Image (cartoon, rainbow, N blue to C red; front, side):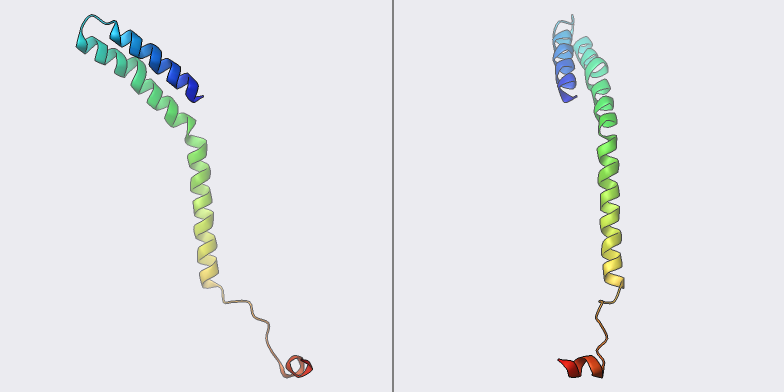
Length: 84
């Protein structure tokens, strides 16, 4: 999908270059190119940001659980230690 953004920015850059004055070229570039492409890129990255945030929250939760739980050690009684 990024190829669409790159292609559109190329088209908008050429449109801005053919404007009659510098200010019109800047406005064309910003409002036809940079702003819509920024919104599109932000919307395209929503799923990956959500997955990354969820994975980070799960990792933090696992770390907290590992720190609060005592280590799992089998109780040693006299019968099992005498057999060894």
